Image 1 (cartoon, rainbow, N blue to C red):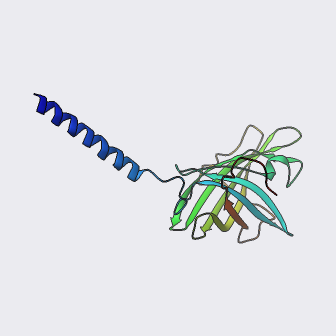
Image 2 (cartoon, one colour; image 1 turned 180 degrees about the vertical axis):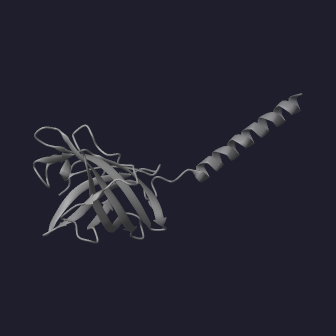
Image 3 (cartoon, helix red, strand yellow; image 1 turned 90 degrees about the vertical axis):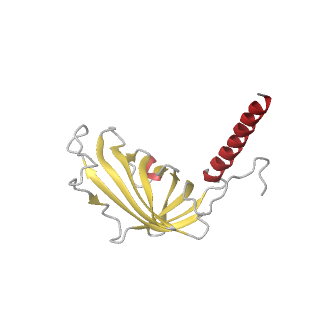
Length: 187
C-alpha cells in the first residue's frame, strides 16, 4: 500500500511539473517584444503642413484596440469632440497589421451626436516590433438626428472620407511605450 501511495504521489508531482512546464511554454513572454504586436504606442498622424495629431493607442493581445487622441478635446476643430476609439486589429503579414476603430463625434456646444467616425489602418512594423509606420483612412457616417444614426456595422452604410485626407490616407508613425524606472528625474 505504501508503494502504491508513493507511486500515485510521484505521478501527481510529475504531472504537475509537466503541466506547469507546458503552460509556461505556451504562455507569451510579455517582457519580450519580438513578434509581439500588443502594447501601448505613442502615435503621430501627419495632418499636413507639418502638423501632427498625437494619440495613445493600445493593441490588446485579444485583437482589440483602445485609444485616444487630440481630437477628443477639440485639437482639430474646437466645435467638435470625439469619444475614445474602440476597435479590432489582426495580422496581415509577419510584420504588418490592419485595424478598424470606431468613435462617436459630437457637437462640443450642445453635446448632440453628429456622426460615427471610423479609422482604418494599415501598419508595417520595424524588425523589433517597437515601432511602425503606415497609413490611416478617416471616414464618417452622418446621423440624421442626434438619436437617429445609421448602423456603423451595416456593409451598405455610406461612409464619407475625411475631406482633408490625402487620396492615399494620412501617414502615421509610432513607437512602443516603454517602462521608465521610478526615481528622481535625471536631466
